[in-house]
Every structure is written in structure tokens, then in C-alpha cells.
Length: 382
Image 1 (tube, rainbow, N blue to C red):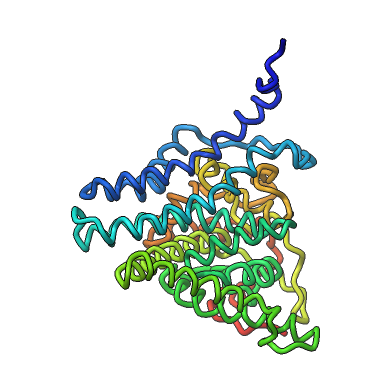
Image 2 (cartoon, one colour):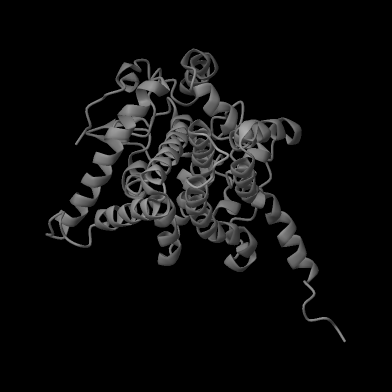
């Protein structure tokens, strides 16, 4: 008699192809190991996220292979599952650590801060990235999981900003998240924190106005954002007191910093051609930096195939296509290395400014005056 529990060879193959994308789950035991051991173990989460995957990129190289974009949802089960189990695992780990650490006598105050810096690296590198995947899905319950992840880092408005502003205005002065040429990260960061919140709120307010509703209408998602974020803060208070709230805010701040570092890298210096009258050309793969580095794409569930994400935003991450140099500009390294370089503007400019200039010469040789595109604070065309 055949064992009905035996997986078919085709299913085993699907699991095998999806398994590398499950490596991100390893950050959870790494964080807990750091919490229980303290000391130098506390450097493990950032070392694993930044340096280990950078080293693996050098070891494994690039992956230019593409899945069939018409692959059915059923064949993507094992890919989707990792994004669905991460939210509850992150929730349990984050608040479990707040409870544990505020009662742990073996950790000094500095060690607790260092630990939650590492937690923020995890919730930013993996958690916000998974929320990005989930917010693009059609199923409401998947989008709700994305909202849960964003509330855990106090950045719920990212959903509205990303879907209503960034995807529509990428590469134009109306997109706060597109880093301008020669704009260092330390100038970009405070600007984007301020402008992205306002652009997200104004986008939702404008949608309600088109329905003859005020921004105070209960259908405004900002009420849900604020409610979820308040609930997270109250839970942190109940589990860890005011120290727990402080640690929660530390990890949220680190996670937001991680997100905006990635945003900075993804579109630095790339602009859509202005057609006149406030109109711009359609978004193309050339308007995002592409990175085919295998290991960091495992960690980031193909986020580095960002050129295709903006070209086809509704594609699930395993179906995102890699675009070659002919169609999209290429980063020299994966996001872990590039985000570290972005923290040192002279190094960043030395690496990226020649690439931006080459991109301009390749795709827009007819544009001779780039000064209007270079301004970090262009007025928004209406």
C-alpha cells in the first residue's frame, strides 16, 4: 500500500526551490541566542544580516534565472508560506523579548539597547520587507498581516505612501522616496521621514475628498494605523513597563532606518523623463536599480529585483524577473553592502555617481541640462 503522506517528487522539488528564501527565519533564534548570552553575542543579528549575507553573495554570485511569470498560485505555496508565518513569529519574538529582557538580570542597560538594535535590524530587514510583499496582495487578510508588521515598527503609513505615492510618482519630484542625485543619505533621511508621512496622509485625504468625505471619516486607514500602533505601545508597556516601551521604540527606530536606507539605494539618482505639463514618461525597469545577487535576494525575498517590481507591482516575489544591463541599471553589490556604503556619503558618491551619469548617457542622451532633476527639494508639479 502506498503511503499517502509521501510527497510527490514535484512537490519535493517545489520545496527545494523555495527553501533558500526561508533562511530569514534563522534570524529569530539568532536574536534569542543574543538575548540569553549577552556580551559579544549581541553583535550576531547585525553581523548575520549585513556581513554574513554579503559574504554569501560573494560566494554564490549572481542569479539571472527567471521563473515563469504565469506560474499558478498553487505552485507558489511554499514561497508564500514563509511570508505568512513570519508575522506571528515576529510578534511573539518581539514582545517575548520585551518581557524577558526587562526581567533579565544578566543584561546591563547598554546590552539591552544593543540587543534591541539587533531586533530592529531583524524587524526592518525582514519584517518591513515582508510587509511590503503582503501589502501588494489582493487578499485582505494578507494585507492585514502587512499592517500588523508595520504597526510593530510604528511605520504604518508606509503602506499608503508606498501604494498611493511611491508607485505612482517614482522618479519624479512628487516622490519623497526617490533619492536625488548627490543627495547624501543623512540629508535624505530626515527629509523622507517628514515628507513621506505628509504625502501618505494627503493621498488618503484626497481619495476621501473625491468621495465627498472628510479625512476624519472612519474609512480613513490612518485610524487603523494609529489604533494598531497604540495597541503595540500599550502591550509593550504591560509586558515591560516604561523600559519595555523604550526598547520597543528603539527597535522601531532602527527598523525605520533600515527601510529608508533600502529606499535610498533603490532609486538613487534615477528620474523619469519630464514630458511637459507636469507629466512624466511611464515607469520602466530602467527607473530602479537592479541587483541579481543570489544570497541577499534569498534574505530579502527578491526585493533586489526591484526593476521588475515597479514594472509589474502585482507579481509575487518568486516570479519577479531579473532585468539585465540592457533594460535596467545594475548595482555592483547587493543591498547589505550598498546600504553600508550609503552611510558614508563620500564612498557612496564614488561608487554611484559615475553609474548615474552613465545611466543618463545611455538612456537619455538628448537631455543636456540635468539641473532641474538634481534638486533635492524640487517643487511638486501639479
